[in-house]
Image (cartoon, rainbow, N blue to C red; front, side, top):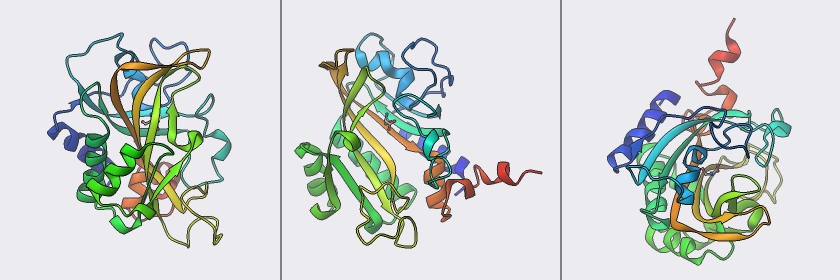
Length: 257
Ligand code: SER
């Protein structure tokens, strides 16, 4: 599957599940002074999550152009050190605004990963926020992931915020074990390691709070879903190449002469 096909399959999969396909918004956020660049698919929906804006749909899907070169989500320092960061990328994401919540997001995520892009189940690992027993139970009991492949992690890895303020919540990530030949090579390497072996593919955020400038968390009017998966990362794995730069989305730019 080419990168363009993967993007199409993602949008079509969620369209079939009654999501509105929404175009990528500008890389310069139109009305958000807290961000220099759009850094996630949820940016154009921030006010919908906060309850300040109503749309005529409760489910959306997009492939959002993002830049992470500063601020809270800054990939600049790791470009060239990993095979998976490049500051500008496309984020595939599905969103629920007070509609489905954890169970729906996890079920869709798993079905897309294993049924549509055919990721090998045995290589997938799951992380959940340390005290999120509900997400743990859904993965374990409904999806059937063995308990020893669901790892509970803290705030740094499994609590997502767009910036110092704004919508946020605990999250659950789908990682793929790319095998011993990739990454740091340490016998201790595991899903918490920053190398490329256990690579995060998809982040499912359970949007539940608004964080204000004093750091106080207020519950959102409706629990919501915000997911994000790097198109170039997913393409590299599907195409069985070792680096995003070798995927068909980036390689033609590098070899252009
Ligand atoms: N907002 C989350 C992220 O950027 C999920 O889309 O990872």
